[in-house]
Length: 295
Image 1 (cartoon, rainbow, N blue to C red):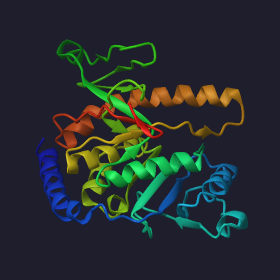
Image 2 (image 1 turned 90 degrees about the vertical axis):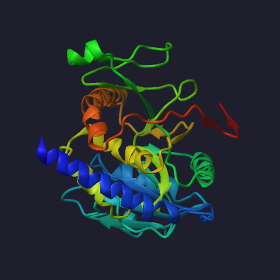
Image 3 (image 1 turned 135 degrees about the vertical axis):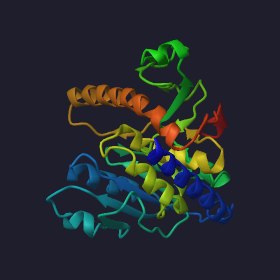
């Protein structure tokens, strides 16, 4: 409709402005340390405490920022005045826009613990491609068949026993891929490395998020797609095996099921997001960084 056309024209102009203003500011002369930003989403203080305790130990971590969104609870002294001296509690941050002292920021969900070696490897990879986003949880997109799209269905076939096909709705499909084997095109913001300039106030990001419902699962991939929109480059994936904190095996399987359901829902809104950002396609990447080797 007319309103959506006006919105898309505005977003197109914002993208052109960001390509002109942001990309030239990114170069290979980046800091040798990075910031970890913990994104709270489980309303559990113990998860945040464990994350700070673990990640603050890493030598290359300059600061551990906590995006505090645990309602009705003040950050305890052990977090606000963490013994490492590296913790910084951020209140009411607006979509990751709070300032950092380093070029690189590693966003980490509060229930994930990475080793210092894993964070360091991802940081080293990012330093080679600082205009791109480096992630750990990849997805692949594919065009749904015309017939199935007409029926409101999509199906991305399983390429091997490790891939997980997701039945979706719309003109695009998404799939959780095996990072050791198949190409990918998107990473979720569950854990990723990116230049801090991408986290500053962005009209393109702000207006895109306003077009998505507050609980839309596509909010987890819009950051990756925005950077691809600006750079015309896919993300890069680094293999890692983060510890996922769970209180029991029951919650582990529940969360795994919810995550797959969330990808299903992401597929349903992905077509709309591609349309909003005027992306006819998204480039694929075939390289996965495994330790010192590439696959």
